[in-house]
Image (cartoon, rainbow, N blue to C red; front, side, top):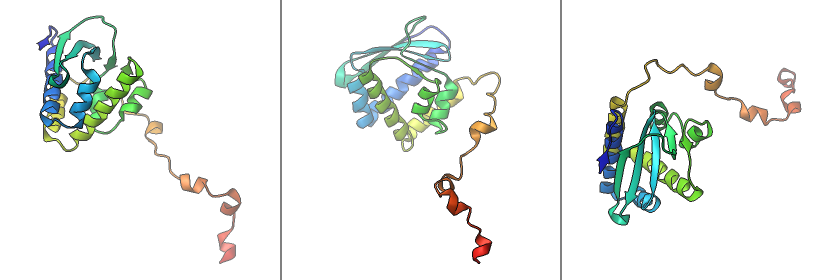
Length: 181
């Protein structure tokens, strides 16, 4: 069941509903993890300022009820660009949480369960054409920022090379090779 009022809540709720149905049809370990983690619980999520409350009921016959809400305590907050980066593999879920691009609130068991579900969804997305189409749909339907995000600084893009060389003792590095030849 979906109940929403804002212009962005509808597409987000529909996208979440489609995600749940894909997982239900798949009936894999990700679906089982989802049922075990969310059944009987309620959470409020926010994506780019759009808040939805999700309520899960029914155990194995899981039903997700989604409604638009305003100013509720948030369990998950992020933006679409962060989700795009995670889906495309540019950013890990853990990295997004560590850099505050994703905000999470809940008890440890619930957070660990949701983490397992999300990792399962991302892994399934690599081989499941339905999930790949869903990612494409999200990318096309959900608006991008008006101005493109700034390029990351060169320092943050710089890859660290030479780790193996740093492990060689300094006295070995100072040996004059021309002298030995």
